[in-house]
Amino acid sequence: MFELKQLDDENLESLLKKKEDHFFDFKGKGIKPAKLQESFVAFANADGGEIYVGIEDEKFVGDRINPFKNLEEANAIINVLLEQTKPTVEGVGVELLEIKQGYILYISIPKSPKVHYTSNDECYIRLNANKNRIKGDRITSLA
Image (cartoon, rainbow, N blue to C red):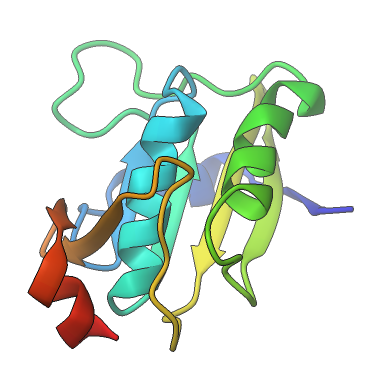
């Protein structure tokens, strides 16, 4: 089971002021689990990081907060990240943050000593605020 925490309005506003960078990313809840897995793998293959799912990035026009309405909506994402990444990333933290409108999924990814791949056998690494697909010698040097 994953930890369920309350996120009050003040902490939510503080979270919304954070900037995406090498260690931090916002993702909308509509993201396909396989697409989110690319960022997840990129963090694990770099220096680790944090992803909040249910908050659009700052370039989004409109209400950036679009949380999951119930806990079950996040299951597909959690399953792909924790069960379908090759090899499994150890030490991942998963929390569901309850706000007035629903739930935000918080994922803490540690830096891993292993090289990780998506379920499509692709390898990514986080550089600045971007994920980059890597191949061949880049993967070998990462290992």
